Image (tube, rainbow, N blue to C red; front, side, top):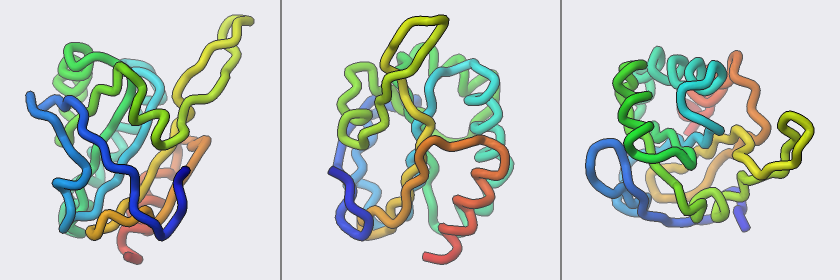
Length: 153
C-alpha cells in the first residue's frame, strides 16, 4: 500500500533506452512517474506532449520524468519516436508496477467491463520517498500542477 511520506515501492522494468530502469537507482533525483492507459491515443499523446513542453523545467529541478503503461517496448519506441518525447517510457506488460502503485481499475469499455490503467502520477523525492500522488488525472493543466509540486520540494 502506498503511503505519502514513506518510501515509494521499488521496481525494475524495461525502458525505451534498451535498459531496465530501477527506481532505487534514481536516488539523488526527484522522479515523476506517470501511468497512462495506452500509447498512441489522444489523451496519452497530449499528456506526453505536456511533459515534453516542460521537460527542461523539470530537468532544472533535478527531476526525471518516466511514463509507464502496459504497452510493449516495441510500441513504446514507436510512440516515443513519433512524438519526440525526451524521457523514457517504461513497459509494464506483466502489470507488476501497476499493481504496486494500485493504478489498475475496472472500467466500462463498449459496454464491457475491463481492467485498465487509471491515469495517475506519483512524485518521488530524491531520497526515494513518495511525496504526492494524483489519481484519476485529467490531462489539461495536470503537468503544470506537478511542476509546481516539484518546485515546492
